[in-house]
Length: 201
Image 1: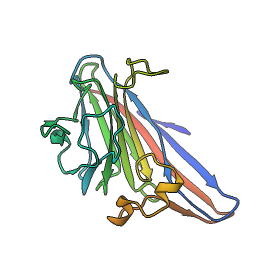
Image 2: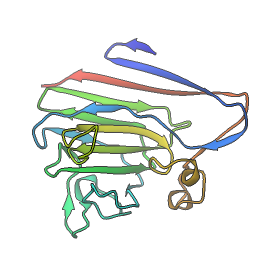
Image 3: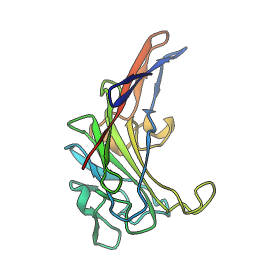
Image 4: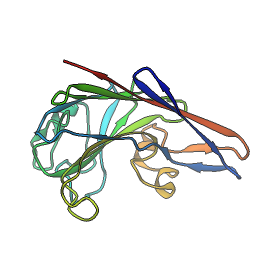
C-alpha cells in the first residue's frame, strides 16, 4: 500500500500452491450520507447490468434481470427504480453486477458532504464489478436495519458466489464473461487497485 496525492494505492499478491480455478474479488465499502438521494453513483459504460439471479428476500429488483440503464432498473412489480441516487428511498439490499465495464472505475459523488471518491482497478484479473447497495435492508445482526453503504467490488466472479458456481458453467460465463481466474502453481499474481478522493463544491 502506498499513498499518492489524493489517493491510496494497493498491490495485492496471490500465490497458489497448486493449479486452480477460482473466483476473485475485492470488497471496498464506501459510507453513504443519511438523506435519501444525497449521493450519486457514476458507473462506467458497460455491456449490461445484471441483477442477482436469486431472491435474496431484501431486494425489489426483478430477479435475474439484465438491463442497460442503472437509473431505470426493473423492479419485480413492473416499475423501475433509480439506482444511481443513494441512499435509496426504500429499505432494501441490492446487488448488481456491471458486466463488461468499458473503464475500470466507479465513482461515488457525495453531494451532501462535498466530496467524490473513486474506486479504480487493473482489469488484468478483475474483469467486472459488483455494486452492493446496503440500504437498511438487512435486518439481522450485525446490520440491524441501520447499515447504509455502497460496496464497489471489482470482481472476476459470478456475483459473490463461490467456486462451485463461479468456476462452473453459469449464465454469465455462457454470455461470454469471465467468472473465475485460472491460477498456476508457484506463480505470483499482482492485483492493483486504488481509491482516490477529492473535495467538490
